[in-house]
Length: 98
Image 1 (cartoon, one colour):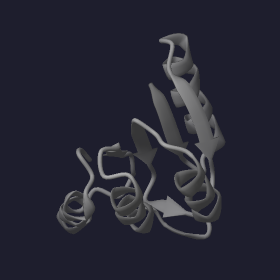
Image 2 (image 1 turned 180 degrees about the vertical axis):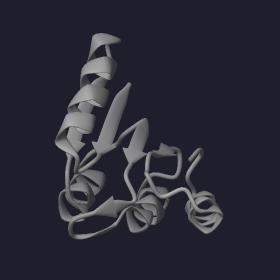
Image 3 (image 1 turned 90 degrees about the horizontal axis):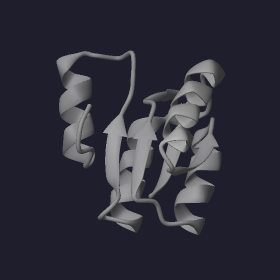
Image 4 (image 1 turned 30 degrees about the horizontal axis):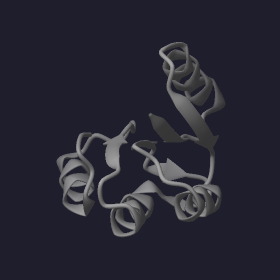
């Protein structure tokens, strides 16, 4: 299974990647919307873990792009933002869990 991790906080991204690689997943890690957009349009992923607040934009835009480019990709939002509106928006954009 190939997973895209979109997270700008390096220690968190490294921790997630280490755990998943230990369990035989293949991971790509990116820290910005522009890098994520590049990967989304170049590769196909089984799952994406998406942070909402990134240095150059919003992760919600990536959720929408992922669902347009590869509708079968599973999407998990991992974010410190926990308002009801953020959760509803994420799920409406196509995330599978928040």
